[in-house]
Image (tube, rainbow, N blue to C red):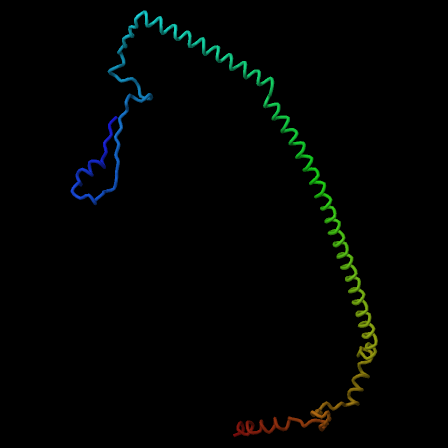
Amino acid sequence: MRIINVNALTMGTTGLCETFIPNSVYTQCIRWKRKPIWLPTAKSKVFRVPKRPVIPMEDYVELKRLYNNYRTYMTSFKAYIREIAKENKMQLNETVVNKLTEEEDFKACNAINDEWNAEIAKIREIKLAEIREKRKNAILKNILMQQQNREINKIRLNELVKKVKEESVTFITAENVDAAIEECLTNIVNHNRALDLEGNWYKGKYPPISSIPLIEETQKPAAIEQQN
């Protein structure tokens, strides 16, 4: 592994001014201590057969004894741990205890939820009953108003029909049209009158002044011009 401290080099080169401190940049170049595991065997070592280490007999016997002791100790230790775990499991089974506590908790929560649902159901029933009563009253009120409007319209129409029947006597029909014309010709009504601010009527002359002579006077010069 190779590490290059660039900051130290820069500080050495810039030692002339102590107040000048450049940006501290550290560059570390690290090489692998050994070949990565995902790379294949090098071509120079494909056919190399490593030499088997030569261990003296005394060392071999000692290592074998130590390994056998280690294996015996570990086997007994694992068996002891299994026995302890088995005893603890028999005395206190956590899964069973947790399951029982969860079931009890679920039952308690379910009972509380049922109580809340019953209370909310009662409140909902009261509220729905009030809404139904209000809606029923509103519908009855609308029905009464409609009936009253129908009665008022019926009375108004009856009065209108009665009035029309009373006035139908004065209507001009094909049978009395001649008599109506004669009456209009005999009874001439003068509409040429005015009303002042004090309520006095001023009747004019009847028949009104005809405008025919004026038209003839205005037309005479045109006729004279045509003759000329």
